Length: 116
Image (cartoon, rainbow, N blue to C red):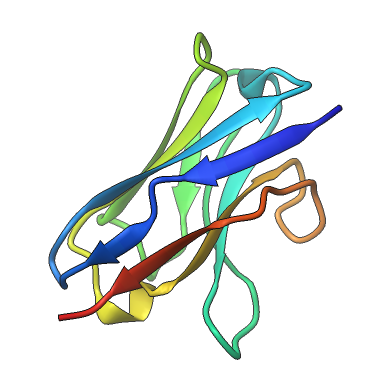
């Protein structure tokens, strides 16, 4: 059974940092394309970051490029998203998604709130 569970969210001041984790089971995280997406209240789901299977090429939404970093640990079967220099507009529920970012399996999410 495919399962994904996010953690690491919280309340942080603007300019602060967080590291989100997504522990997966039922598949090997390095064998599939993986994404992070987010959804702010009243808004559509926004794609944030992508890491390819095997080679691990990455790409980012323009809104987070240079501030967020996606990575994975095959030994721990875990996907990460490092969030640096956070802004109030980064406030959202963050989800990790397997395969297709708009329709693939995802976890329950972890809330990130950026506020002073």
